[in-house]
Structures are given as structure tokens and as C-alpha cells.
Length: 237
Image (cartoon, rainbow, N blue to C red; front, side, top):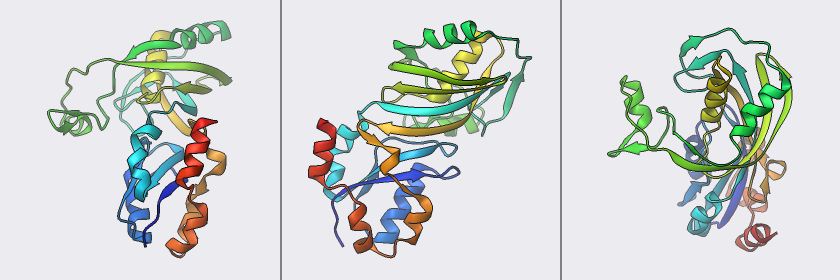
């Protein structure tokens, strides 16, 4: 059957955003399904699926700022900048003060440039960077202007730091952790990440993976879809 709207999913760890899209498309026989912002396999949280005519506003929804909660581990640098990568270097973690940590985080607020990681879906001459990385190649990446409007350091239990950030689209949280670790002199990588919000759409309204798997057919899924008027109203709030 045909359906039009936005489905909010709480993506589990271990699958790609495209895996979720493919699952919904094949299980419910929808012709058009897309997502509004990639989450790495390691990451969990809010994944917005656009279905049917909602695919026409995919770019608008992708442009919204995002909010994340994450955990970084100091002292270890990986090739992917997260826990799924290979360890490149290990260093002892100094007895950092709260003031030193705040200064490192404060450096990355407002507008600044970020160099995308090699292990990413960005393409160079039509080839995804992660494929080049798998082949042992490193190429120059153009820095991209990004923005962080707010950050909070929630918990410090060295070598772990739990934090929350509000950032622009196209922002790489694992690169953020990598860069902060570099500035602190011991390195760091991302070990946990959850997307909490995208614009005015929140994880609280999302369907979890187990519930989605229990939905029997497209008709049973329709009550969970945000209609196009609902989406428009939420965006204007």
C-alpha cells in the first residue's frame, strides 16, 4: 500500500541507517523510503524515516540541528575515531582538572572547521572514503564549517567523559572526540552515541526496534506515522 509521512525510529546499535530503511521498505512494501541523517552502526537513537510524499521534504528535515549524548574514552586513538576501529595509539591519561576539560570543550563552540574522518560515507571522485580507508589509503579532505550551539559535560570518570552537544547537520561527533583528545595530549575516541533530537523531533516519540518488528503490516504501522501536516506543525514550533 501507499503511505505518506515520517516514522521516528530508535535505531539500535549494530546496524546501519540504510539497514533500517531497507527493512521498512521490504517489510511493509513501501516504494519510497529514505532517512534524514546517517547514524553510524555504533550509534543509537533517533532516526527519521521519510515515506512516500514525505521524501520530497527530506532535505528540509536533514538540515535541522541535532542533539546527541555521547561517551568518549581518553587515552586511545583509533583509525575510525570510534570504538569500532583499530587502535592506532595509546597514551597515559593525565590527572585532568575540570577546568582543563571545560577549556578543551569550550574551544569547539560556535562556528569552526572540522575535517571529516577517512572512515565516512563522503565520496571522493565517486568513491566513498571508507572504501579508500579499507584499502589503506588516506586522502586530503576539505575542512567543513560546522557549529555547536551548546555542550554539557555530564560526568567525568577518567578515562571516560559523558557529554551532550547541540550541533549543525553534517557534524561528526567522533571527530569532535578525536580532536578534543588531541588537544588534551592523550588522544580519545567515541565509544557510545545516541541521537536525542533532530530539530523539534525527539527520541521520546520514537518507536523502538523490538516494537517495529512486531508490527504486522503497513496498515498497523499507519497510526505511528507523523502526517505531513503534523510534520509541518512540529517544524514551526
